[in-house]
Length: 236
Image (cartoon, rainbow, N blue to C red; front, top):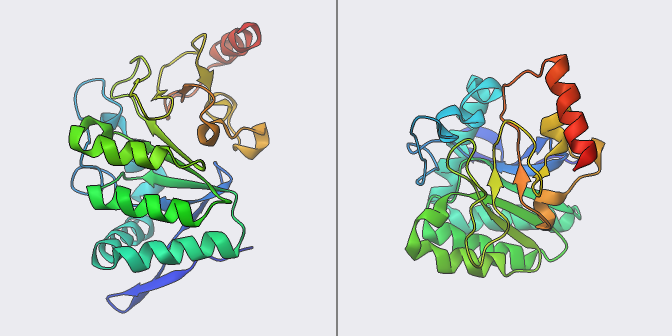
C-alpha cells in the first residue's frame, strides 16, 4: 500500500493525505465549516451545509479533527511547499484520480491559483474540485482558469436539499442532493447502493459528463424505498 507523505507541526507528525475508501482514491481533507476552510458555507433551514457530512460520523473522531487542523495550519504557513509535496506524491506514484476537499473548500483566492499550478504539473492525474466559492464573483475568473485545465473538473455544489443543479458558465456540471432520483441527472451509485466508486466502476465526478445527485447522507433506505429507487434507475 502506498503511504501518504508526512509533515511535522508542533513536534507531531501527520499524514498529509488520506486514502478515502468510499471514493477509492487519495484525497485532501481540511476542517469543514466557516471557522475552518469553508468561507462560502451556507447555513440555513434545509441547507446542505446544515447537515454537512464532514461535520459528523468519522469526521468527529479526535484524531481526524486534529489531523485536519494540523494540515490547515501547515498549508497556511507553507502553501507552496505543501502543494509541491502533494504534486510530487501524485506524479511519483502515478495516481490517476484525486479528490480535492473531501472536507473543506478553497479558503482563499491564492489557493485556487496554487491548485491550478499543481494540476498543470500533474497531467496524468484527474482532479475533482467540488466548491461553493463560485458564490464569490471575484473568485470566478480563477475557478474558470482551473476548470479549463484538461485534467481538472470544478463542480459547483448546490446550496440546499432539493435545489436544481447550479449552472455557472465556465465551470463543470453542478451537483445536487435530492432525496430521490431525477431524470436527466446522474445519481451517484454509491449513495444509492452503498459500496465504493470502484465497486460501481464510476468516475463521473471527475469526468464532467453529467450533473450528479448525491442522495443525502445519513438517510437509511427502507426495503420499499430501495425497490422504488432501483425501479426508477432502471427506467431512466
